[in-house]
Length: 144
Image (cartoon, rainbow, N blue to C red):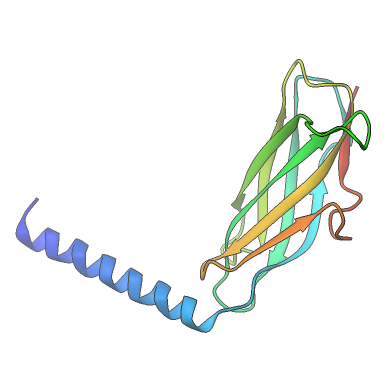
């Protein structure tokens, strides 16, 4: 790589870090989850459920959305199968995100409940929502 290209790369990196640090210094509020929607409530394994997440952030913008669904035969089960998912932004404002939940052929039949969704903003503020929170309390799908 030529010396001028190295300086341009270094200048870009320093500018990026300065902007990120400025956001981090000013933004101390985590993102807010507004809605989680599934395109299917019932499916046969193997299959895919598309997840749409809507949220907002007051300052720096949402940088990451992830979560997992869990299957439990009963409430006392300590170890339960999980299906993790991540989302990608679907708009330039970073308020709408989508991802896929891939249900394997051998996934247990029954109700898979959304147990956790985490939103992280550009300034690294995170908000974790669990199935005890009203925003995701009723989100689930059934494998038939």
